[in-house]
Structure formats: structure tokens, C-alpha cells
Image (cartoon, rainbow, N blue to C red):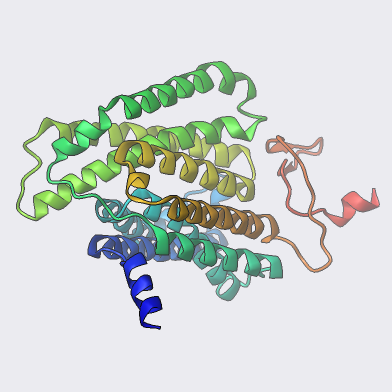
Length: 347
């Protein structure tokens, strides 16, 4: 027993203080963001009952306090997420975004009476298991004493090569493929969002570290590198939001969300591994365990989204690469439906 206990103690040293802070901030962020969707939706419903609905071009929700409460809640969540990257590695913080999906689904089931299918519950459980696995095996955050160190990491050949490939791919997708296939292939809009997002997270992490050091008394605002990272973050976030809105406006949200989550998280982890060398401080067993946890989260996320609109006795339909469009009677429908309507079976 003593030998076993000492072996466990030597093998598992626990999470660092910074990782714990990052974990708490990331979970808080997911809680606020997940709740914000529910609060905003209730605000939209309340505004739509007395004015023009947002879905048909109305802006009455801007006068609804409940909607603004949801927006403030989301902003608080994003600020917490920003701060989490200053303390913990992206490989720990980014996958925990799946927790917001669980919270949103659970609150929708309780507050909005949007029934959560049994497979959706299983999806939530898988997300929790995967997140726990990653948290328990996440690498320790490396010690950084200046934003110049982050700049040196960002200008090493490996990350410059990654950034060059990403930027080239963004330009090819934007100018060669999106004009022709953007309205019919979901991967192009989401691909640009994910590629840009992987760079934006690296910029956010660098900026977060700079602000953390500044608040601790080591002023980083005097360095041009801090402002360079700020410009990168602003450009990336604006571009990312632009193409994400295009994807959401063109395709079914229940398909965009999991596809975007998987691509964005995968590329962000890859970028973090290249830039911050997260896996250099881990053994192969820990790395494989983290990857398994990520796969479990992916499975849970897809299961939750693909079944969240299923009713009892419903059948899950498969449809690929079709955008939103109108039928000959002028009614809009989603080209990537989650459920089959009875009329489609009877016809």
C-alpha cells in the first residue's frame, strides 16, 4: 500500500495553481455563455410577442431588458474565457467550451421546455467525461516573464510555417472556393472561421499573458509586441465573426455548431502545441489520454446536437451540403434538417 501510494504521488503531481485558475475561469465562462443563450432567447420571445420578431428583420428586442441581460451575461463569459487563456494552456481551456453546450441544453430543457432527448443526455454525459479526462491530464502552463518571450515563440520557424499555411489556406478558400461553393458547402465558411480562430486564440493568449504581467506590476504595455498582438486579435475576431455569421445564416445552426466546435478546437490545439510546445512537457500516455478525452467530447457534442430536436418516434434524417432556401410556395426550410416531417413520409 505504501509503495502503491508513493507511486501514485510520484506519478500524479496535481494541477498547478495557474491551471486551477484557468480551469475555474473556463468553467465560469461556459456557465455564463451557456446561460446567456437561454436568457437572450427568452428576451427574444418576449420582444417578439409585442413587436416584430428578429427572425423576420425586427429589432424590438433592443428595447427588451431581458435580452440585454443575456448580452451582458455573454460578455462576462467571454471576459472570463479571455482571462482563462492567461493562466492555462489552450489545450485545457478550449475543449471546455463544450460545457456551455451542456449548460445551454439543460437550461433549455428546464426553463424553455425544449425537451432533451435521451441521446442528448448521453451526449452531455460524454462531454463531461471527456472534459474531465482532459482536465486531469492537461499540461502545466509554462512560465513566461515577458510578452517578448511570447513574441519569440510566435516567430519561431515552426509556428511561422503554420501561420503561413493557415493564411494561404484562408485566402484560397475566400477567393477561390467561397464565391462558388460557399452557399452549398458548409466546410468553406466554417473552415475560414476555424483557421482564423486558431490564430486569434494564440493572439488572445499572448495578450492575456501581457495583461496578467502588467497587473502584477511588470508593465508590458510599453512593448510594441503587446500592441502587435492586439491588432492581430482585432483583425482575427472581426474576420471570424463575419464568416461565422455567414455560416449561421446559410446553414442549420445544429450542424454549424458541432462542425465549427470540432474544427476550431482541433486547429487551436494544434496551434498551441506548435507555438507553446504544450506536449514537450508530457509523456506519450498523457498525450494519448488527452486526445481520447477530446474524441469523447467530439462524440458527445455531435450526439447532443444531432438529437436535440428529436421527438419520440422521430427519425433522424441525413442531408448533406444543402443551404437554407425557399420552396416553390415561398416557405423557407433548413437544408440540413434534424427531423423528418410526417408530410415528407406521406408524400
